[in-house]
Length: 379
Image (cartoon, rainbow, N blue to C red):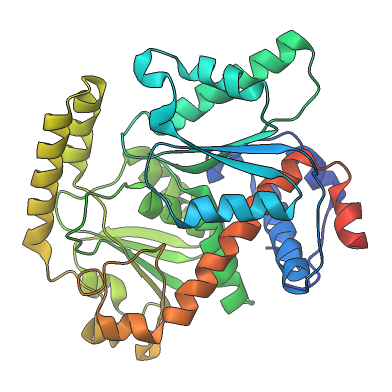
C-alpha cells in the first residue's frame, strides 16, 4: 500500500485511470500498482468518512447487489458503501430471479444492466460456478451497453464467489496495514482450518487470503486436516506470488505448526473438498435431498476434528504469545475460537470488519468516478 499515511495516501491519477470502468472479480485481476491504487483510495475514503466528510460522487445512481447465499456483513457493507457515494442500494435475493427457470447469466446481466449503474454478486457455494457466473453476467451487461450505445459504466463487484472473496480479503489487508504500517514483508500469517458445527462453509476466504497476502511479502502458512484441500489454481497462485514478493507459502497438516511464531492467525472453517465437489452435480440436478445429505456428511466429517480450535494454548505458541486474531465473522465461538480469545479480540475483529465498506466504496469509485484523484484530494 503506497501511502504516506492512512490519512493522506498517495493517489496516482495515471493508475486510477486504468481502473476506470473495471470490474474486480479476483484480486489476481489487478496488478500490484493497481492494487496499491485501490488500497490508497480505500484509505482516503475511510479517513474522510471517519472525519464526517461526505463523498456523494455518484448521486441518483442504482447499485444492485445479487445474493445467492446468506449474508449480513457484506449486504450491510454494500448498502453503506453505495449510500455514502450517493447511490441507491438495492439488495436482490438470487432465488427471486428467473435463473432457476432457465434464464442464463448473460441474460440476467442484460436485464439488470438496463437499469443498474453497478452490480455486486455473491455466488459462493458451488465450485466452478460462482466466478464463471459473474463473468457471464458482466458479458451480458457489456453486450447490452454496446448494442444500445449506452455510455454508462456498470462494474461488477465480486461479493464472494467459489474462488475468492475480494472485498473481505482486501478489507483484511487494509486492517493489517493499519495494524502494521511498516508493511507485511516478513510477517508470519497462519491461515488455518478450524472446526465448525454450523455448515460446510465456502473455500473462498482461505483461498483469497493465500493469494493476496503472499503478494505483499508475507510468510503464509495454510493448515488443514487431510481432506480439506483448496482449489489447485489458487494454491499455485499463492506460491507464485510468494516467490515474486520475497515471502513464502507452505501447506501443513498441523494447526500448532501454523501458529508457532505467527504474527497473525486466521482460524476459519471450510468444507471438505471432495464433498464440495459433490455439490456441483446435486445443484445442477436441483436435488435438495442430495444437497442436504452432502451437508450432513460434511458436518459429520468436521466433527472428527473438534480439536482444531484457536484457544489460549495455541495463541501461546504465537509470536510473543499474543498474535493478532482475525476472522471474517461470524465466528463459531467455542468451536473455531475459544470464548476467551474472542473476548480479547472483539474490538480487533470489529475494526477489521469496518474496512469492508471502504473497500467497496473504493471499488465503486475507482470504476465509476472520473478524475477521482482530484476529487478525493479536494474533499
